[in-house]
Image (tube, rainbow, N blue to C red; front, top):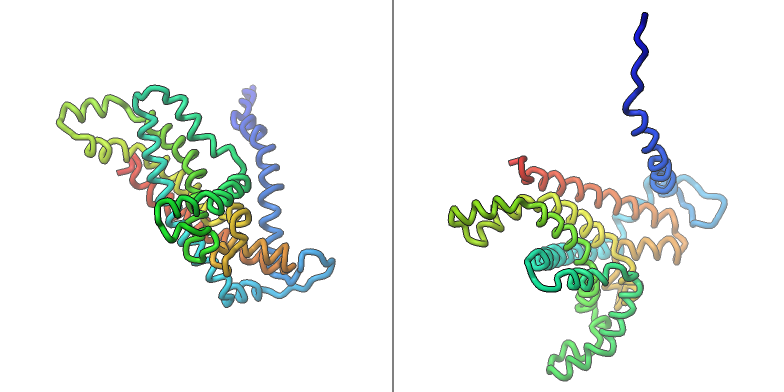
Length: 294
C-alpha cells in the first residue's frame, strides 16, 4: 500500500502571503507598469487619446536644464540630510540607552514630531522663519538672520533642511536604540577587563552590531531626501527663483500643473531607478561589515 502523502507544510505560508501579494501588486506593481507605459506616450493626463512616442520623454528630461538643476539640489539636500540625521539620531539613541532618570518621558517627547503631518510641520516652521528668526537675528546682531531665510535663494535650502532634520531623527533613533539594546553586555564587560576605553568599545563592539540598523536608516533617509516634496510645497513652493525645486516637486509640477503627465512620469521612473540603485549599492556595502560577515 502507498503511504499517504504528507501535507505540504509550505501551503499555509503561501495562503497567508497571498493577500499581501495581491495588495502589493494592485497598489505598487500595476501602477509602476502603467507608469512605464505612459512614460512612452504623450498623454497629458486628461485626454482619452494619446500617441506612443518611445523614449522622447526620457531624452527630453536629460536635455532639460530645470531637471538637472532639481537633480543637483536634491542630491545636495540628501547628502546633508543623511549625514545630519544619522549622526544626530545615533547620539540621541546613545543618550536614551543610558540609565538616566525619566528616559521614558524623553523617549516620548523626542518621538512626538514623527507623528505630525509633514505639511503641518512645514507650515509651522514657515511661520517660525518668517516671524521668530528675524527677531532673534536682530537681538543677536546676525545680519543674515534678520530677514526670512526662506526668501533667500542661498539660505532657503537650510531652512527646509532644519525642518526635515527636526522631524526626521525620531524614527532612525528608535531603530538605533533597538540595535543598542541587542548588543550583549558581556562584550562590554570583557572589553573593560581587557582595558578598552569608551571609544574602542564604541568602534569595535557597538558599531558592528549597529550595521544592520545603519543600513535600514540609510535606505529610509536617502529615500526621504531624494523624494522631498511636502516641506517644499509648504515652505517655498520651489522658490525663490526655483532654487529649492526638488525632483519630486517638478514631477508634480509637470504632471498636475502643466499637464505634461507622461513627461512627469518619465522623470519619476528615472528617480525610481536612481533610488533603487543607491539602495542596492549601500545595502551590499554595509552587509559586508555586519557581525559575522567580516
